[in-house]
Length: 81
Image 1 (cartoon, one colour):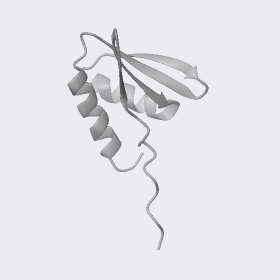
Image 2: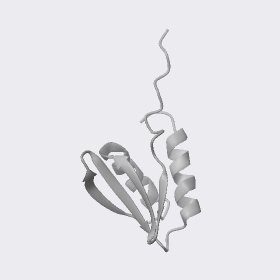
Image 3: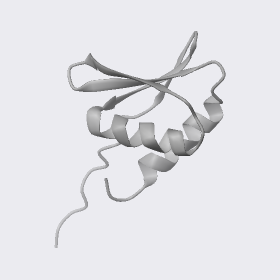
């Protein structure tokens, strides 16, 4: 029997900024999230390596912050990746 693996997505959260909101994510998670937000009609700009190995997904004022949080929470709860 093996123990369940730790949720590797627990660190993800929405950071409110003056111009909208931002999510900092490891490169793999950022790529998956960028595609997921695009599928949900939420436009974001991805900035690579804002910190070593960490990308930023930036959403601007027109983005619905509640919807961004909802999509992120569903991603964090998803099994697999």
